[in-house]
Each structure stands twice: as structure tokens, then as C-alpha cells.
Length: 121
Image (cartoon, rainbow, N blue to C red; front, side, top):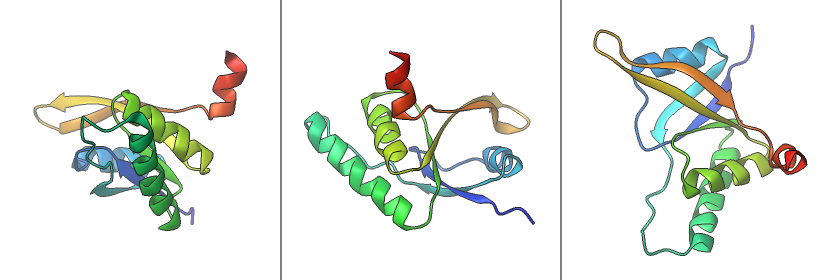
């Protein structure tokens, strides 16, 4: 029996049923708890990065091997970088609301490791 990989939900929403099924079919168990911390708009970038570092280290210590991010803001960029450097896989999903099926993921990407991005520059 194949072991499912635990994926932390590093987004602001609880996954919909179809999202959970999508990731199960890919071999991941997506935890429902949104783990992205609330960020105050007055915080400095270094403060944001440190809070993310703490939260991602907690996720790794809790046995998560991957994270799901949403959006491509500074917060998600930092989360990608920190998580990848902690050895976590980082995924970004795209989907949309379908009236009869709820929210449906239609594709995803596994983000490159920072070293791969640096080599491409």
C-alpha cells in the first residue's frame, strides 16, 4: 500500500471536497486547517519572513512533507522559499467554482527549488 504524503494547507481557506479528492488522487492528504498566519499590513518584510519561518518549521515538525500555497504575493514567495529550504515540497493549484461540483482544481504545479531558480537566472 502506497503511503500518502501529508500536505499542509498554507492558504486562507478550508479546502472544498473536490480539492481534497484531487490531492488524494495525486497521493497527498491535504490537511483542512488553513495555516497561513494573518499578517499585519504595517509589518516589515523581515517580520513577515520570520513568522512564516516559524509556522513552516512547525508544519515540518508535525510531519508534513509538502505545502499548498495560493496566490503569488510576497507572503507566498517567502513561504515557497522557506518551505523549500526546509525540504518541503511546495505546490500551487489552480481551479474554479463549478455550480454543480463546487470548487474544482483543474491543474497544479510543483514549484522549483530555490537553487533551480537561481541556476535559471
